[in-house]
Image 1 (cartoon, helix red, strand yellow):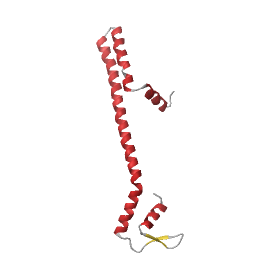
Image 2 (tube, rainbow, N blue to C red):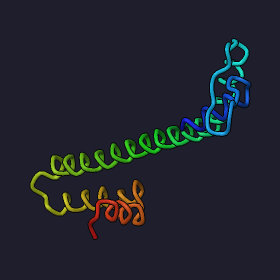
Image 3 (cartoon, rainbow, N blue to C red):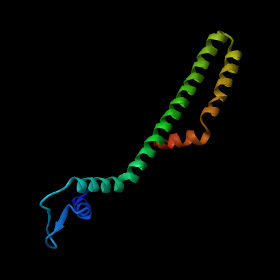
Length: 125
């Protein structure tokens, strides 16, 4: 908050009186009700900004939780490929079939648009 804003709000609640056009000074006494009024005015001015920030924080938290879930799902698909290797042992056709099944499931986790957006976000085309 800028000094001019503070002075303006203090004047609005009667904490400051103007003595001339260029100078302001505090009244002889600042009373509790004036301080409360000043605090309420400041709170009112920033209430919407605070609410907006809370909404942004909640949305980002939700986004992080969703990304964490997607990461876990993709990790599980990688683990399925490792399990396919254990199951198939030396049968390459079975291994390839199991890997293809796991590979196809990735699109249930991320869409092609999401993958493209992630690649662009990393600065790679």
